[in-house]
Length: 214
Image (cartoon, rainbow, N blue to C red; front, side):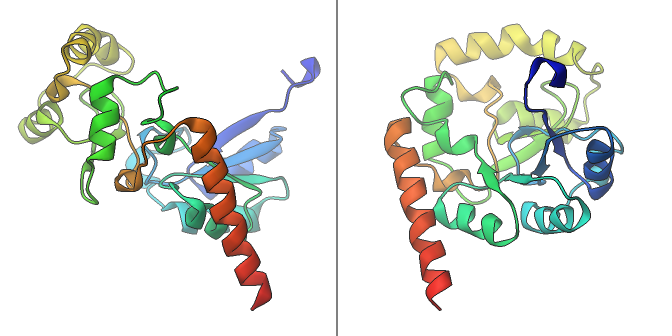
């Protein structure tokens, strides 16, 4: 990939993973905290043993490696961007913030649920795909988690539930859709991607300017 002239970026959910990536020639490390929505890129340890939050993980990785670090997980506004930049990250990676945008390919019910989210709306489940992923809590997640129902290994479980998720999405039924979202989904905003990006940049710049003037 690097021989083709591409920039290699990879996620790390622990300092050990970040160091491994640096040693193996990665150009940029994405510090992916436990708050992140969807599946996280844990690969050197059990995902449930790599649960460091975004802010702590970002600072630890920045101090452990010499290559640029991007922070990801639970960042939804300019304040979050400014915070991770202050911790030493070169940038912030955001996903959930853009789900409600009209340009997003997420099902309508997913967009609506992000905008209706509260601070305690997300859960982590393996029952949709076979590996841990954070999403907006619904009937499927709660009942499958509570029953400790058996599951296939990833990605077989993901294929098994695919038809159910697709049908529920088309029907607008939130009970059986994997609505991946980070912990700060409650900060979601309904606006086009361009306008949201402009707002995020403006908010972050204003806060960073405020910090430097003090």
